[in-house]
Length: 193
Image 1 (cartoon, helix red, strand yellow):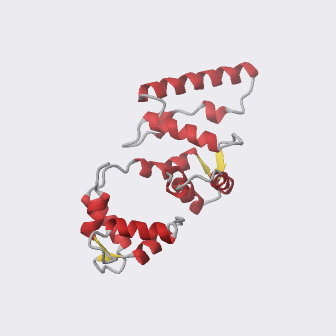
Image 2: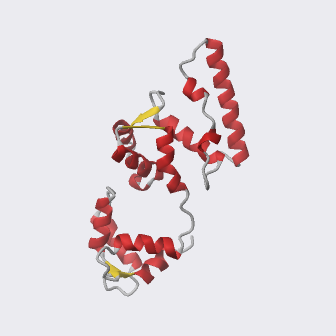
Image 3: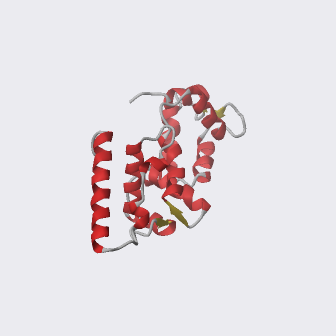
């Protein structure tokens, strides 16, 4: 983030006003969608105006053609070519992949629909971790192992190596039996720092 929320909002308004004046001076009306962007239209519970503006800036960076929609295949290819470590864990990539499952293109509103739930994730509560646990412990065995985690990783299209999966299990498995109980999972996921 550039600074405080107020600074981000002021900066966005200055840039929007300059853009509006440039387009007006040049006599162009083709950028009308961008000129009409009002972050207030996208604010939702738990999402601030500053966060909307940051998401719009991210969207605009990804919209290399400046047409107001993302070609999701091109966007995914571009991001993958950056060769970032842990790219699949980045919220923007998770959101883009969620959009891709629904279609080949997305506008800013659709991008917001995919990003907002990721922004609302805060401190893990026991109930939210219990829901996550139910996804992992599909057979209701009371514990999970590397195969269970691997199944979920594949289901959500994440690209983690066998070594990374093994490290995850080893980290959470306090008694060293190769199985993770809910208590071990809860302790690991609710750690601070």
